[in-house]
Image (cartoon, rainbow, N blue to C red):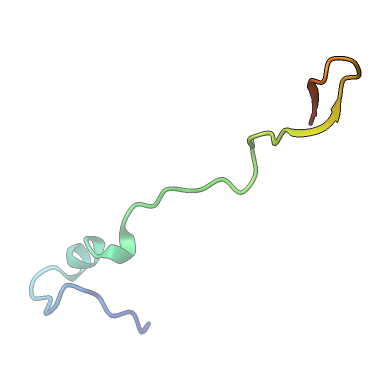
Length: 57
């Protein structure tokens, strides 16, 4: 059997139900590895005559 140590102490009656309420089987939130990102805007140049920066993506 596996070496997982459950956190329910001495299980007396229903072993399956006790293990289902263990932190091993808790619900988890999936984090996206790819997808929409925040676009990083860098200021690279200045419009001639106005002195205002132009943002390039």
